[in-house]
Image 1 (cartoon, one colour):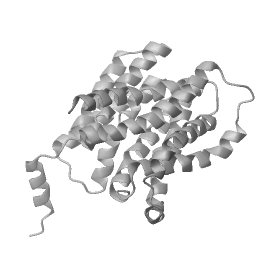
Image 2 (cartoon, helix red, strand yellow):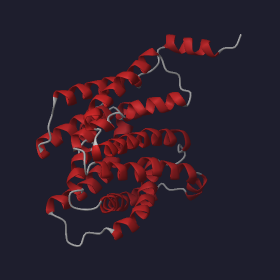
Image 3 (cartoon, rainbow, N blue to C red):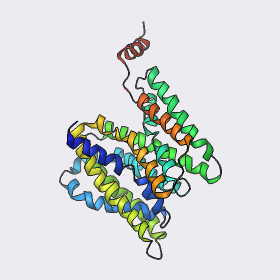
Image 4 (cartoon, helix red, strand yellow):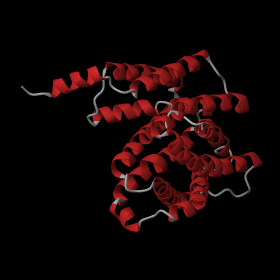
Length: 296
């Protein structure tokens, strides 16, 4: 990978590790719908000029259904669930649970028929063991539903890219993102109006809202596209394994959230399980899988 690629990789690892901290701060001063509207609307306005240069209306009309599914599973549902969950959960715990996205994605692909070897299944078991270790102490009262919200978010984050890869190849990525953000803004708008704050939020809340919209949405997507061009899609998504470290560090250093031995062990299990579960099936495993499907 080039020097530029490494710089972009480092920036993206930090930028997409910070939303959990900013969401935690923002939900302390505004409602979840207001947070979501500010993030999607501002992000859409900033990215819109780039999208308009590449939009093809006939292509959009032909792919409106998978675009709708992508928007619902990538933003509408997950961002609402994640933001609501952080009213109860710490930002570091939320970031670690989201690290299970590659594992959930591996399960989804397996259900769809993609071949998996022993190493991949071992990764799934180890990864889910880490999730269970992390979530179990929090399965009480309001925390239980918040854990469920984060895991549902992980499901959406895992399935949406599969839809994009299989059904939206003709639609430029920037167009997909902007269409998604505009649609989500319209969905969140009436709920945001109904819960609009009666007074100007505190300065830290305003900074968090601005950071989510400008840095973690608009700037992040622009940098991510450039990272894909520099390093390729397979290397670009490796930031998924680094983001949780940033999320935990930010929560501990800025919000004084606790860092326990259990958290560290769970993170190692989730990270290790993710790497195994998403690794390529060996040629031997592939041959065995193919042989098993043959009818003599």
